Every structure is written in C-alpha cells, then in structure tokens.
Length: 293
Ligand code: ADP
Ligand code: MG
Image 1: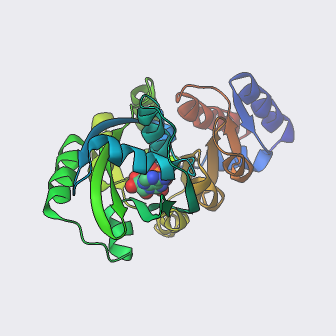
Image 2: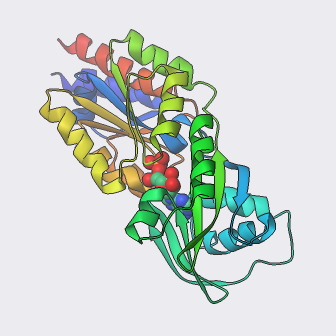
C-alpha cells in the first residue's frame, strides 16, 4: 500500500467530517462486511421523552414521577433526563437522594426520603428479587406493543409504577441504512433496550438483525462472536457502554457528540451530525484502497 494514497484518503476524509486516526483504520474499513449500530443516541436522537406514567400501589402520578426524578438526578442516562424534564414542570424542588449507584444496562439504585428506590428494567428487579405485580405487567406489555422503553420504579422492594419513554429515529438514519445495504453490507442493531423497542426501530429502518437486552459488558462479546463467524465488523456507537465493543471491532466509529471514552476507543471519529457519514466513511476507504491496488 502506498502511504501517499492513504494520506490522500485521510485528507479527503477530514473534509467530509471523517477523522481517521491512522492508516490502519482506513485499510480495515475497506474490508468491512458487517456494520453493528448502537440504537440509543446513534440511530435515535437519544433525546427521550416520557410517554406514559402508570402509578401503582397508593401513589399518585405526581408522587411517582417525583420519587423517580429524585433518584435520576444522580444519572446521566437519556431516560433519567426524560424523567427529570417531565418533573421540571412540577415545582417545588425534588426531595434529596443519597447512596446513588448507576447499574449499567439495568438502571439505578439509591435512597430517597428514607426509602430504598430502584429504577430500571425487569432484569434489574429480578436480580433484586422484587416481584412484578399484574398491574405493572399490563403496563410493560402495553409499552412493548408501542415499541417504547418502559422502566419500573420500586420503593422498599415494592413496585410503585411504570414510566414509558421513547425517542425519535434520526432524520437521515433511513438513508444511511439504505446506503449501507447498497454497498452490500449487513446491518445489525445492538442495544441494551428491550427486544420490542429494538425490533421496532430495526423494522422501521429495514435493519437485518436485532440483538437486544445486551448488557454493556456483553457488547464486545457480540462483536467477537461475529468475527469468529468470519465477519469483518464495523461498530458505530457513542456511549460509555460502547467503548469496549468499539475497540473489539475491526473498525470502531464513534459519533463525535458521544462520550470521551467512546471517542478514545474509536479508530474513526464522525464529526458530521448526519448519519450518512457512516456509509461515506466506508465508501471513502474502499475508494482509497482501490486507488492503491
Ligand atoms: P443502550 O444500549 O440502548 O444504550 P443502556 O445499556 O444504556 O441501553 O440501558 C439499557 C436499559 O437499562 C435501559 O433500556 C433501561 O431499561 C435501563 N436503564 C439504564 N439506566 C437507567 C436509568 N438511569 N434509569 C432507568 N433505566 C435505566
Ligand atoms: Mg447507547
């Protein structure tokens, strides 16, 4: 490979909003067969909004939201931001929280006004041996039907409500997925979210395969499994959860608005806002390699 042609490719990338960290990255891009995309924040805007609130036990909707929002003050997750935005309309100030723990891929735990509070998915509640009552199951099924993400709120070991959130698919996600398919690439959606929410996004975009309810620590394993099956994998992500998978992939592409740790782990940083930058990066690499051969 002539270094000059690769340098030209890197230069052209920069003008397209594609920051290639080295020549190896460009060579790897040319061989990609499969593109794995994170859902939240990559295919979707990551700006979630509360869609539905189901208060159970003796709580009112407002009490449920305030309990959840109080704990979510400790979290930077898009779900936490959605719940806080909803309660921002309801002063006075939220009760204080303490002993906060973020539980990656599961939710969060802590104490609010003398109570133990858990917020997260059914897997989190199962791990803590909290029963899911019939009223909560109905709410979860409804969220699944709508392709929304539902989080359960438990207080002192009792489920007190379900909060549905959703975000929107990015405007140009469809064009980007279509372009990847036109390049003969296989697409895979990878998410820690529910199977229903993952499937809905994949169906809307025509993505080939959905891998849902994947814990952050398992994301890299998924990439390695694909590689073991002979695939050359590009991984596109933005979050803390994606960093290990980005480094495990043959080519890691990070959305520039993502976390620092994702940017460090990536081979290519996508500076442009729109998702067309993903097929553009792979096309650029292929063109550059053709020039060399
Ligand atoms: P993704 O792979 O889509 O980025 P995450 O791994 O961040 O998803 O989260 C997976 C799931 O864990 C969420 O869908 C939600 O059910 C739960 N979860 C994580 N953090 C929180 C939180 N702060 N509040 C409520 N639920 C959470
Ligand atoms: Mg994410």
